[in-house]
Image 1 (cartoon, rainbow, N blue to C red):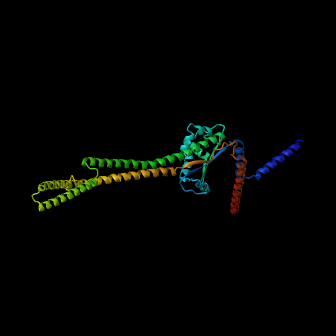
Image 2: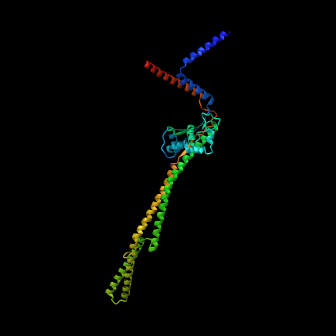
Amino acid sequence: MYEGFNITDKLVRSSLRRAKRRISPLFAITVLVPTVSAILYYGLFASDVYVSESSFVVRSPDKPSTGAFGVLLKSAGFSNSSDEVFAAQDFIRSRDALRAINRKGDFNASYAAHGISIFDRFNPTGMRGSFEDLYRYFTGKVDVNYDSSTSITKLTVRAFNARDAFRFNEELLELAERTVNRLNDRGRQDLIGFAQAEVARAKVKSQMAASSLASFRNRAGVVDPEKQAAVQLQMVSKLQDELIANRTQLAEIRRYAPANPQVESLQTRIASLQRQTTEETNKVAGNQGSLAGTAAQYQRLSLESQFADKQLGAAMSSLTDAQNEARRKQAYVERIARPNLPDEALEPRRLRGIFATLVLGLVAWGILSMLLAGIREHQD
């Protein structure tokens, strides 16, 4: 009986020695060790990962659109706004976004929980807990993908429990909306602010020109020299007509009745008319204080006032155009799909990970075996 046991033991040991000789060190290194490690990791250590996804599009009423979905939006009066899309993407994966969602340490606490595998959680050894380390970890858990054909941006957040995946996705989506709104506000302020400054400067110039013109009128005692000169010339013309009529009458009386007592009165009237004509003519032209002398300065001030008013009108028109342009350029974040609350872990794909490790190991083993065989044949 004991002899039978001895024989069986010898056969088992002999079989194991033959199997060990058949399993080369190369096969063990490239196939067995990685596959066993994958089985241990995916079977015992890997933590469940919950994935929350959302999608959105940034659109604007007055920007060119490309792509099928962009054409659909454009048919409704909107188009995609690529500048704001890229700005939102960059901000979602920025350090500022991490600071915002980790303002109370929520992100750090969620991904550094002791219930997470030591291979998956943040700062498992307690030696790499800086903000830059956290940011590198953050970029591995947040993905932002933009599809240029549809203009849709997809936001994916991975976490080790469903609630945190949903919460962080929702917070990052809100941050993207705030970023686009902030860009809108800044662009609107820049566009409208410049136009408002131009209006303010034009108002000051218009007020100064009007004030200068009013001061000149008060100082010179005229409202419009040209119009007043026309009135004065009409008066001079009437005086001259009356003077001519009186002279004609005086000449006729002297010819037919030199002793007529009307001669003296006509002479007196003619002298008075001549003085009045000279005075009224001098008011129109002939000295520095005449209407002709003040007309040049009045015209200059009047032209400055008119030009300032036109500048003010143009500035106000530009302000209206800027306000309309700001409304046309306003971008909006439209949520296509809201963040989902996952009800089961989608990662890691354990069987696929083990199978992929085995296949890659076999491929590496086959390639290295052929290389080594070729080297041996070349040496022989």
